[in-house]
Length: 76
Image (cartoon, rainbow, N blue to C red; front, side):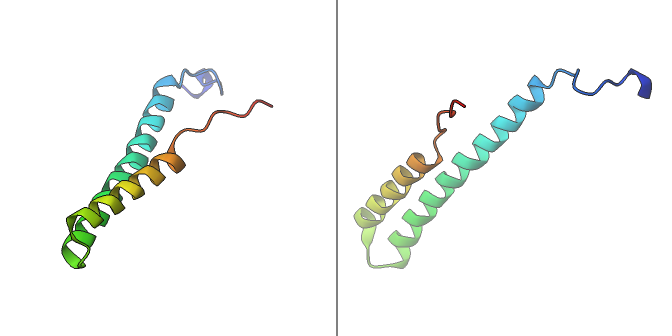
């Protein structure tokens, strides 16, 4: 019943864990797809060749990991 509901008293740890998992999969999956697309596009659609495309994909992956990693929480 509606009278049994008390705002803020529900355990939401499973919802929080699911939210963080979904965000992590979305973030890292997008990076993996981006690196794969860079590799394939440069390899097959330009005269760069495999080595140039691979190096570009590694650079994209390294930059993505650097910018997408979890930052430490700021203490206030």
